[in-house]
Amino acid sequence: MPRILVSGADGQLGQSLKAIQDTYTPIYEIIFLSQADLDITTSSNIQSVFEKYKPDFFFNFAAYTQVDLAEENKEEAFLINSQACAYLGQNCAAFNTHLVHISTDYVYPGKGPVPYREEQAGSTLNQYGASKLSGEQAIQQSKAVYTIIRTSWLYSVFGSNFVKTMYTLGLERDELNVVDDQFGSPTWTRDLIHAIFNLIQHKATGVYNFSNEGVCSWYDFAQKIMEYKGITCQIKPVSTAVFPRPAKRPPFSVMDKAKYKSATGADIPKWDKALLKMLSNLE
Ligand SMILES: NC(=O)c1ccc[n+]([C@@H]2O[C@H](COP(=O)([O-])OP(=O)(O)OC[C@H]3O[C@@H](n4cnc5c(N)ncnc54)[C@H](OP(=O)(O)O)[C@@H]3O)[C@@H](O)[C@H]2O)c1
Image (cartoon, rainbow, N blue to C red; front, side, top):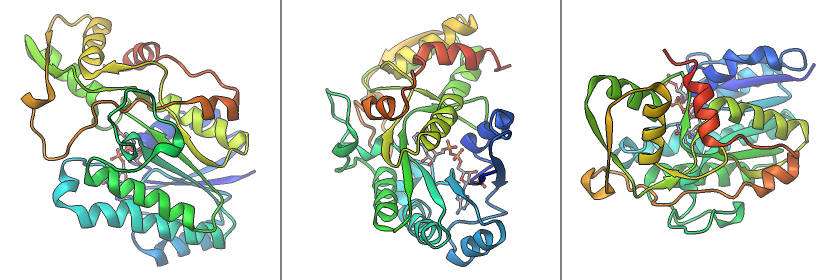
C-alpha cells in the first residue's frame, strides 16, 4: 500500500484530510505529522522522517499563511514557504518520493480580466505570494517528481477562515461591510482533498490550478453564507479602499482549471453548492 506523509497536519487542510481519511485509507497508508512532529524548516528533520517512514508521497500542507504579517515577517515567510520547499524537494528526490505541494492564486498578477492559466504566474502583489512562488520554483528546480496545486479562498469547518468568521459575525451584528471589488473562486477543502487524490491517481505531475467552479466577490460570498444559514444580518458592499491592509490583495484571482479537468476527467463542484454542503456541518 503506498504510504503518504502529511506535513502541517494540524492546519485547516491537514484536519480536513484527517476528517475524510477513511475514503482513502483502503488504498493508501496516511501518516499525519504536525509541526511538533516535523518542522519543515530543518533539512535534517526532514531527512530523519524520510529515513523512518520511506514515504511514496509527501503532501506538504505546512505553510506560513498569514498574508498581512508576511509583509513584516518576510524572512520567516520565505524560510517556511520557500527554503523549506527546497529541502523537501532535495529529500523527495533522494528518497524517490512524489512531492505534492499546495500553492496559491497569489502567484498570479491578480489583475484579470481573464482566468489565469498555469504558465502565467509571476509579478506577485505581496510577500506571501512572492514566498509561495519562490517555493514553487525551488521544487521545480529540485530533481523530485512533483505535483503543485494552486488553490484559492480556502474554507472548511476547521481553523479560521472567511466562512467561519462571517458566520460568527453575522450572528452577532445587524450589518457587515464586505468588499465587492475583489473577485475569485472559493474552495472547500474537502473538494481540494479529492482533487489531490484525483491528480495522483492519474499520475498527473507538474502545476495545476484548482478551486471550486464559478466566480464571486467577497460580498457575494458573504451574502450566500447569510442566505444559506438563514441569518438576517445585512451585508453591505464596500470598496477595498475602505479596508486598508498591509498586504495588497488581487482584484481578480480567478484561475483557469482546464488543465486539471483534462488530466483527471473530473467535474468540479460549483462554489455555492460546495458552500451549502460545508455549512450543513457548521454549528
Ligand atoms: N487558506 C487559504 O485561503 C489558502 C488559499 C490559497 C492557498 N493556500 C495554501 O493552502 C495550504 C494549506 O493552507 P491552510 O489554510 O491549511 O493553512 P493553515 O491552516 O495555516 O495550516 C498551515 C499549517 O502549517 C503549519 N506550519 C507552519 N510552519 C511550519 C513549519 N515550519 N513546519 C511544519 N509545519 C508548519 C502550521 O502549524 P501551526 O498551526 O503549529 O502554526 C499549520 O498547522 C498552504 O500551502 C497555503 O499556502 C491557502
